[in-house]
Length: 471
Image 1: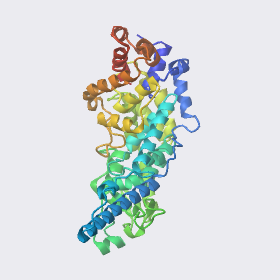
Image 2: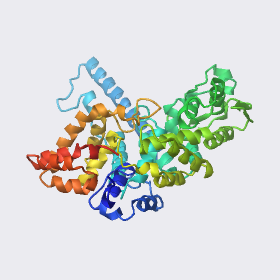
Image 3: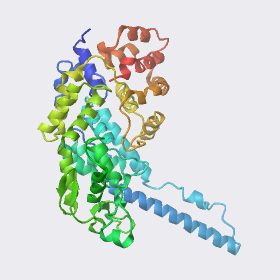
Image 4: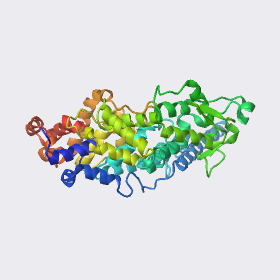
């Protein structure tokens, strides 16, 4: 049975966006496609500003200084304690012990920088009218993922600096920004990669690291089994030697910022996938990335991942081909590719088989009730579901397949109960269904919610309904 206008609007908000807020279904019901396309053209779409956010390199420098200072304080206090013990002087009862003194709160800790980044990201998702561009930010941030387990104080800044500015720009520009960002260079070990025949390599006998080169080819651009060889991986890894950052210990003003270090760079031309790239320092690597960004295999790889994310685990070939063609025809214009996604009939299939990832379900629940928790609880909630913010377990990022998340429904029930405990007395469950699902809510779901013994129970059932769980 075909959906009415309200149902199509609700479908658009769940499939393409981050779920409805109060009044948003009615606001776009006249033209859901037009509303999604209009969001792509909105000034400032996809950006996160304010909150005293600082550049990721500065955040890393602050964390480095904070940790070094604390370590030095601990050493100094232990030395003082040892001197007192040796001289027989007793410690004052009111004087903090070394381990306690080192734990005294500072005016601005590295953790507070992380919380500001989390708040900025959460607020951007909560404030978005539809959330389509934010979903694209999340998609590309996961495609080009780094892990805060490795770059804790850079992960949020990396998303703001390398992903958001290009989310509606050209793929090639995003690719260049991502691969030269210190967070990526640290995460995939390129900052320590040294060309075997470089000045540093010949003197120090240190080695090449292929991690970044391999993941650029396998994950970021061409995809697996698309014509490149192990020799191509090795040669590409040599091309991007010297892509590193300034040391924080000796450069307090610009430490952790990108720098091309010729001493580390493998000299000479390199042949990659049949094309010769002459020696050119940092430009040699940029030239390879530019060609990878325009490669048909990259278009196909990106198109499939977008189709799988927004449509189905096994998306129709016609959709992947449509997106791939738009990517090639527009030289990787990501706004145009996003428009093709909205315009494609395949993405408006009323069969909703795609389970939302935990982060999407959480934000859609918070948008529906009109409030989100403070940053620490946002981090705790995502960790509870196994989708820790900016902490994928591998460079492939978090899975976009339903099977990876289906076992977490029990945890969703727990969180749904907690949400309902907070706001259940102020939200009418039947009205909640109208606000968030409209005619997407089946008659069975409406009857189940109506039979609930309390508002809290009814809201829990609404949040756990199949219709609310799916894109």
